[in-house]
Length: 426
Ligand code: AMP
Image 1 (cartoon, helix red, strand yellow):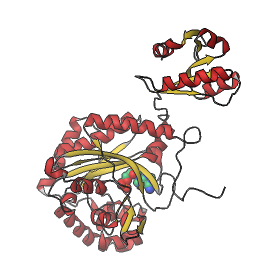
Image 2 (spheres, rainbow, N blue to C red; image 1 turned 120 degrees about the vertical axis):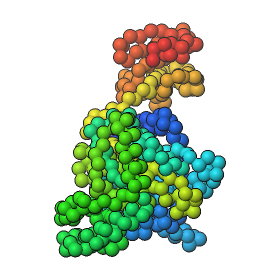
Image 3 (cartoon, helix red, strand yellow; image 1 turned 180 degrees about the horizontal axis):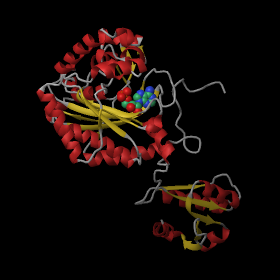
Image 4 (cartoon, rainbow, N blue to C red; image 1 turned 180 degrees about the vertical axis):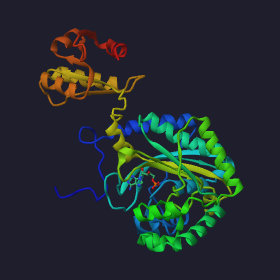
């Protein structure tokens, strides 16, 4: 074979080669949960102008400096494959003037994101996120709802053992103050920092706080403990968020070293990790971004959101046997013997496919004149609950032989009664 998928990308095939069924189940579970929480879907384009992310995520962030797939289109415009979902949704919200009709809106998205990172377990160049954004409110209840929603999604997907860690970065001024303080404290200990952090100290000192390098971690943990940087307002906001989470019985840990890599975060930030994930242990993350809407030319409105990594959830699901999300589809197979039966079966197949069904159904038959034994094997492989067998005898009597694949019981059913009988048995 001459062609392979591009490095860091993967095909998502049906079982047993792949696991598209699991993803579809995850998407459908997510859609149900989002609906319960009043979030509506938005689908933004895969490509965006580069400047959207430079402005929102920040010029000095890893994503912007080294991880975006960017190119110039024929009109010399700088285009990127979207690396994340928040900035595009805020752009879409402002572009459609949604803030003028009803400023507070709750959205969700499910789709691919692209980052040119070094591929490894749990880290792809095309990966998928399930995310939510509650735009237009600065209220602490929203921070709590967003975290509740994230937990509800993971619970509905039967993911157990995840940990939610929360921090508050404060408002823009608090963040600036903290950066300044960190620069001053850490400058004295510069030699203990890794090369990346030495650069960060200058441009984005907050990032030193979540550096994974052991020496940076130890040093930062020894000097950072007593730094107080939140203004009264932000402290009050955070207290209310935590009180709401307590009311909702959500378990969390406070972690002053969560800063999130992106510039737009203010106030509450959080990460969800899972011990089954190894070094790339984040299942998802999010937080409040109260300045992004105005920074992008909109009004002063608060917002909060999160994104969960689909591939990471699948890694955990596989290890926890949660991978068996309920597949409630009922498969019906038509097995035929002879040309006349095949013709009859083909017609029956089409009328069943076009019928009204309350449950999720799948109907299939063999077109290749396989032996009855081979057709029964195929029905078994597809997980058929019922098989409708048609041969010359059945055609003569205007019936099908209906076989229950679990109980192995068979019964004759008149053609006109087939749909009704199936309904009674599924
Ligand atoms: P971030 O926007 O970087 O916080 O990403 C949110 C979530 O998306 C992470 O917690 C991961 O679960 C997932 N994620 C981010 N980058 C990647 C990647 N390169 N490959 C797979 N999943 C990713």
